[in-house]
Structures are given as C-alpha cells and as structure tokens.
Length: 323
Ligand code: NAP
Ligand code: GFB
Image 1 (spheres, rainbow, N blue to C red):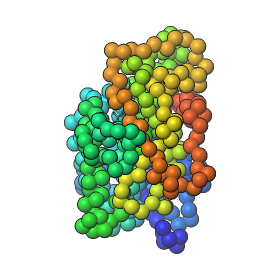
Image 2 (cartoon, rainbow, N blue to C red):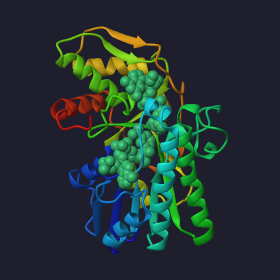
Image 3 (cartoon, rainbow, N blue to C red):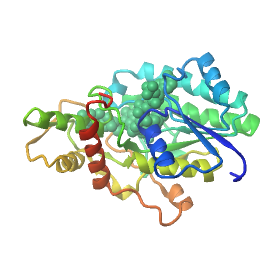
C-alpha cells in the first residue's frame, strides 16, 4: 500500500475474539499508521446477513479496505447441532459483504476461512492448495462449505473484475474476549470457563470432553491480529494464506488441559468424558507459505504465556465476559 493514501479499514466482526485482538494491536500496540482510520463493528451496527443493513453500513463509513471477520462461529458441539444455520447465515453474510464491497469500490477485502474446513480425508501437512480436494469433516460441513464458498467468490470477483478479495486461514484461535459459553464455545475458552467454575465452587473434578487424544494447533489471538495486519499491508494475491503456528507446536487436547490446569495452579483430578465426541482427530496445517513471506525474526507468543494471559484475562473479566 502506498503511504500517502488515506485508508478507511472496516473490520466486520470487530467485537469478537479476533476483532478485539486487532483493535488491541492497532490501538494499544501502536500498529495504526497515520493515514489509517480503523472502524470496528459488530452485529449491533448492522446485521450483515441483511443486504440493506450491509449497504447502509458501507454507505456510512465508505471503507477502502475490509477485514471481514463477521460470521456465525462456534466450537465442535455447536457446529454439530447447527450445520444448517452455520451454512445459511454465513453464506448470506459473506455474499452481502463481498458484493457490497465490490459495488462500493472497496480496494481489498481479507476474509477469514479456517483450518477446520479442509478435507477430512487428506495427507498432512495440509496446505492452501488442498481446500476443495474432498468433503470436510461431517461435524461442521455447514460452516466449512460456507467458508469454502468465500474462496470461490474471491476467485470469481478476481476473474470478472480483477478485485483483490483474498482470505486468511487461521488454525484454532484463543485469547481475551473469547466466547466462554459452555454450549457454543471452542475448546480453550470452554475449558478455562469450566475449570474456573470448579475452583470458584470450592473444588472438584475438571471434566474434559472426549478422549483428549485429538491434536490441534492453537494461535494466540494477538499473534493472529499481527499477522492479519501484515496480510493487509503486504499480501496481494487472491490465493488463501494459512496463518497458523508451526506444525511442531501442535498439542493434544489432554496436553492442553494440563497446561490450563497449570495456569490455574489446579492440583485436582482431570477427567475425560469419552461419551462426548472428539471431532476431527487432526488438521495439521503447514505455515510454510506464511513463513516464506514473514520477516525471519517473527515469533509467536509461547503457548504457556498465551494460555496464562488468557486465564488471567478471564479471572479478571469473567463477570462481563461472553458466557
Ligand atoms: P466471535 O468471537 O464469535 O465473533 C464473531 C463476530 O462476528 C462478532 O463481532 C459478532 O458480532 C459478528 N457477527 C456475528 N454474526 C453477525 C451478523 N449477522 N452481522 C454482523 N456481525 C455479526 O468469532 P471469532 O472467533 O472472532 O472469529 C472471527 C473470524 O475468524 C470468523 O470468520 C471465524 O470463522 C474465523 N475463525 C475463528 C477461529 C476460532 O478458533 N475462533 C478459527 C478459525 C477461523 P456481535 O459481537 O455483535 O455478536
Ligand atoms: O475448539 P473445538 O470445539 O473445535 O475443539 P474443533 C473440540 C475438541 O476439544 C474436541 C475437545 O476433541 C473436543 O472433544 N473438548 C474437550 C472440548 N473439552 C471441550 C469443551 O469443553 N468444549 C469444546 N468445544 N471442546 C472447530 C470447528 O473444530 O474448530 C469450527 O468445528 C471452527 O467450525 C473451529 O472452525 C476453529 O477444533 O474440533
């Protein structure tokens, strides 16, 4: 991006986990550049599943760039019981945002996919070329296909109009301002919430759902925010780019539960409820493409520090957190 132009960067989903992390990095870590105006919006500003409200939002702010995070988002169990809603709502949001971005002359859109949308039967590590090589895991096919259609739309807008509508593909994300609701949350906020409840009730068993065997790569929301800002400024291809920690940083759910217990200094029993689903066993993604573009000194926040930061945030904010 040339330095002189004034940029109006609209962040949809700006009130969520990833949006709040971008706001923190831009406003508190000094990442905002002088020619940039950053606008963070949530569903109260506009229900983006509604085209008229989407148009009104764009008419109000006239963005030159859009970081499109807004989506119906949830963990394994929320997806398993709501595949239809995850598909329909996200299809509407995504088409409204991309078409309105085109109609209003937005120069660049960065949308958000996920490493959970890749084919369930695949070789590892997963890379960006493999998105459409087979059906996703059955647990979240609604969300996965809606996300895959973002990539299809991006290629169609580029083919017809030469638009730089691209996408990033994060692995599992966690951090402050996450969704801690026990039914809809992802695993890390779910376990933080549960263990905090056990401790606050005077002690007991820390129950982890599933076998604890599945493997996941987890990225701290602040690191993801730094990478999305990097993509905004430096990456100009319509091809998706995976934003994940290294393959070697993959951990099992059981190991994760131990790390969370350590962050709480919990000495009680950890129990695995194997009657609950495990979901995908693994979705190991390669960040080779990202590493090839990043400054060699880029470092992810060490996992234990990121977990401790998230636990400490929750301890200080559980009364007002999304429960
Ligand atoms: P989140 O915490 O659930 O936040 C979702 C955001 O989208 C909120 O700001 C929410 O607004 C907004 N939103 C939802 N429905 C909307 C609607 N109809 N109209 C307008 N805004 C709406 O989600 P997140 O974890 O930050 O996820 C952000 C993006 O990253 C999503 O695209 C998600 O698919 C992707 N992603 C997340 C993960 C992860 O592990 N969390 C992993 C990979 C990819 P309100 O606050 O007003 O509800
Ligand atoms: O983050 P999560 O819900 O989603 O992680 P996925 C699910 C894994 O954590 C399963 C175990 O192996 C669960 O058995 N787990 C253990 C728990 N305790 C808990 C708990 O209290 N809550 C939850 N939620 N899980 C999602 C996709 O897959 O990944 C979404 O379904 C999204 O579409 C997200 O893309 C990033 O990592 O399995």
